[in-house]
Image 1 (tube, one colour):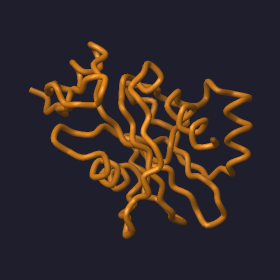
Image 2 (cartoon, one colour):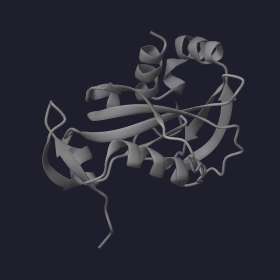
Image 3 (cartoon, helix red, strand yellow):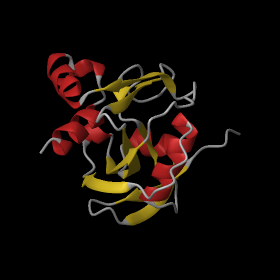
Image 4 (tube, one colour):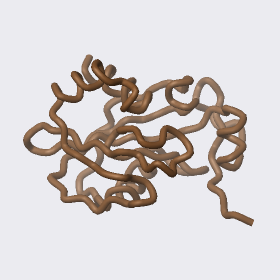
Length: 166
């Protein structure tokens, strides 16, 4: 039997109504939780990751610096810190800055998403199971690329960046 992640299933108000394995949550389009982190360097550039081609959702597209599901019983911020370590090998010393929360919708994969910000210069230790490559990008370059070639970026990153730019 494969050890599968268990997620809290939530209602339209992000209140826990149950727990289900990852496969059920995704197959049935149930609302659940995720955390995204935007990592900026001192030059104001954002680090982007190219999602692995082996990912079940949005493979081979650029995404936020780090993202991942919130496990059952876990808080958003703990998930964000865990994902930073798992995906890019970043142990944060300062608390993550909460930016905003996105409601669950089709573009987020029915995930309520808390978005956080942190600062680091790297270098990062990219997890090859999660990420094919990473790069730094200026804010203006990302805005331009999202307009020019939206299909190269995850729908969630597009929502995050639109909200971040407001």
